[in-house]
Amino acid sequence: MKTMTCRQLGGPCDEAYVEATADDVIKAQDRHLKAAVKAGDATHAEARDAMKGRWMHPKKSMDWYSGVKRDFAALPES
Image 1 (cartoon, helix red, strand yellow):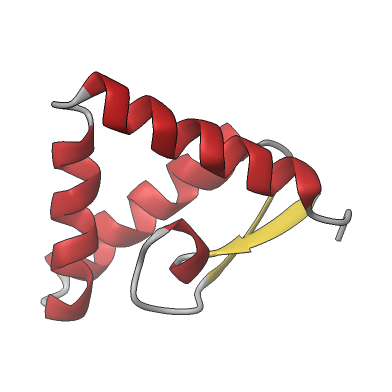
Image 2 (tube, rainbow, N blue to C red; image 1 turned 45 degrees about the horizontal axis):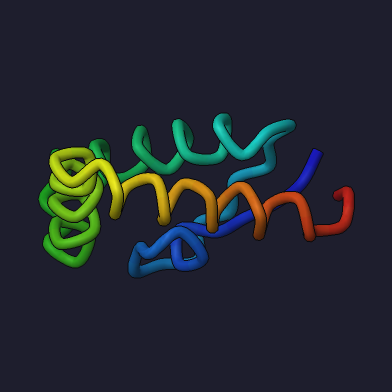
C-alpha cells in the first residue's frame, strides 16, 4: 500500500488515499472530488472539472496518467 494526496494529484487539499495501485488512487480521488463538489466545496470544483476535461484530450490525459503512475511507483510502501 502507498499513500498519495489530493494535492499530489492536482487537487486543492491534503486528503490522503492509501491504496495498492495508482489506478486505485486515481479512483479514490475521483470519488473524493465528486463528493466534495456535491457537498458544495467550491475549492474542489476546479480539480473536478480538470479531471473530467482531461479525458477529452487523450495525449494530455495519458501524460498526466503516466506521471501519476511514475510518482506512485516511486513512493515508499506505507
